[in-house]
Amino acid sequence: MNKQYIYESLLNIIDKNNIKIDEPMKKHISFRVGGPADILVKPNTEEELSALVKLIKKENIPYLIIGNGSNLLVKDGGIRGVVIELSDNFNNFEIHGNLINVQSGALLSIVGKAALREELKGFEFASGIPGTLGGALAMNAGAYGGEMKHIVKSVRLMDMDGNIHELTNEEMEFDYRKSILSRENYIVLSAVIELEKGNYDEIKEKMADFTQRRVTKQPLSLPSAGSTFKRPPGHFAGKLIEDSGLRGLTLRGAQVSEKHCGFVVNLGNATAKDLLDLMYVVKSTVNAKYGVMLEEEVKILGED
Image (cartoon, rainbow, N blue to C red; front, side):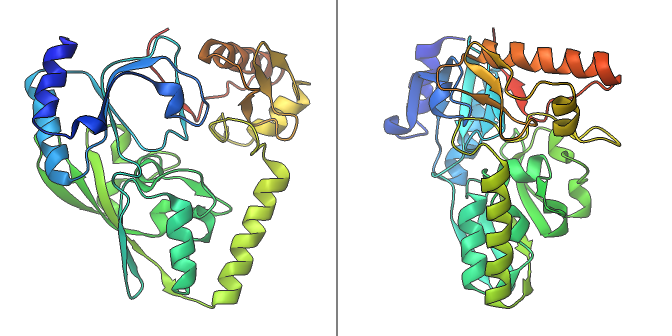
């Protein structure tokens, strides 16, 4: 890939302040690790995004779509090609009655607060998930008994030809931590969330309860990507890790959280390799002891 040529082509589509060359990915993911992306771009409109995906397809450039990077681990060699970030550049939403039309880069926490103000219930479970709508839809994010599939009415997607499609909840094929986006190359533009009228104080109380549970049980003060491993059938990942004697296990800059064993955390100066090596130790130990092979919930990307 000719970086200079691609950069110059991008200047015809996107403001130069929204194009970064050799951008350290650790600035863009919650784990705070990761080498450079060849090029990182933040389009501001669907028109810019459409022109961008057409260029990527025409020039056969490898690409990656990210939100606020709260469920990603980027390796130390970084990412080749173009990273498209849809976060604070793509985060508008409007509320009409019990429907919220939300762009994919909007933070779930912000949408949750807006739903509370309008006395709309059903979004409480999501309001503490530290990610954007796009990422939450891609993996059917869930917590405390709720999942995105319970509240999504429809989703607007863009394909790699720049065409826009609208899918119903059913067509999104939501399942445990996956959706149609797990296998098809669509970019989430926006979604319509359908909630119910509720009582302000009850909604607020439920949100406060979930927040309290998170704060007391999760290592929110250290960089992580949330739950590191998926829940294995019939087990809890955190309990298997704890029962394997791994609480607080530290490998260079990475640690199995003292607070919640289901989280691998960055103590401050970890590399991606530190985190990955520790995750390997955790998986091997749990498998040797219980015959259960844990699977990462965090998405691992990039080059060594």
